[in-house]
Amino acid sequence: MTKHPRKSDFPVSQVRRYLEPGPIVLVSSKWRDKTNIMTLGWHTILEFSPSLVGCMISGGNHSFHMIRNSGECVINLPTTALIDTVVRIGNTSGAEIDKFVEVGLTPQKGQEVDAPLIGECHANFECRLHDDALVDKYNFFIFELVKAHAAPSPRHPETLHYTGDGVFMVSGKIISRRSLFRPDML
Amino acid sequence: MTKHPRKSDFPVSQVRRYLEPGPIVLVSSKWRDKTNIMTLGWHTILEFSPSLVGCMISGGNHSFHMIRNSGECVINLPTTALIDTVVRIGNTSGAEIDKFVEVGLTPQKGQEVDAPLIGECHANFECRLHDDALVDKYNFFIFELVKAHAAPSPRHPETLHYTGDGVFMVSGKIISRRSLFRPDML
Image (tube, chains in turn blue, purple):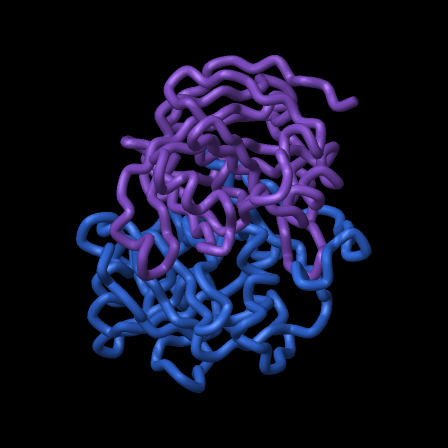
């Protein structure tokens, strides 16, 4: 059984630390008493403050309408311990099964949104739909991260990065070049 | 001196292999006979075909207007061998220096765009501005990748993933879960 990392509040303006390196994330949603989870690799930070993230969520996903209708979701950060769970989530549809039950993940209550947090993930970012101007044309949702929770340790969790073809890159060593940066670039 | 990897044509519809894992990229541009290079970590794949990539390019970058005016750029994929060059590019402004000369990178001629490719990078993706609907509001450019070049080896280059604070994550081991994927998910 996967453990539930203990998490603390984390500043939403600093979420780039977790998302900018490009990990696969699990997006959880809730609409009319049903919950769902999808995998997502097509996302980018857009702004520090307000803390904005853009996500391409294909219209073929059961989550698409749940997120658009509820105007909410949670972006959850899984580590490599959850790799097989991530694959199962990507392989199944919430139209047919209850993903939390089926894959054995634990829904937890958020503070700002009704969509559930995933207890087993290293971090959880509660999101409100900020702008859907590009949803019809590109399935591109812009969310504001309104509340962030992250496990303080490890500082750099081992994350999964998808390359297509069923192949993942796992995050590797950490290198600081802080001393070479102009102070205003940090 | 950094070597110039030998590159082959690469299918633009498969560029997600390089960009979806979330590496720092170098974006090169050309406008009125001046060239420039900037670092970029805020990007996401948006579509396979046409091959679309979304990039948040802050208006404070000298490259912003060069790219908007020319409607072109090249997304170049550096490996960890170029880490100090990447930091220098991020620390300087093309308004003051010629970055290709200053950091010692080699401009190469593209096939579809006038913006230069960076010879030392593992892969080069020639881009045309596809949609600037969100540029005024979010500095978010949607590019179509019109031509891709990639070194065939190594298949999974060691890439740099920025976490903020002058700290990079380096891509680590490769794990295949291909056998667990539904065929239509590959």
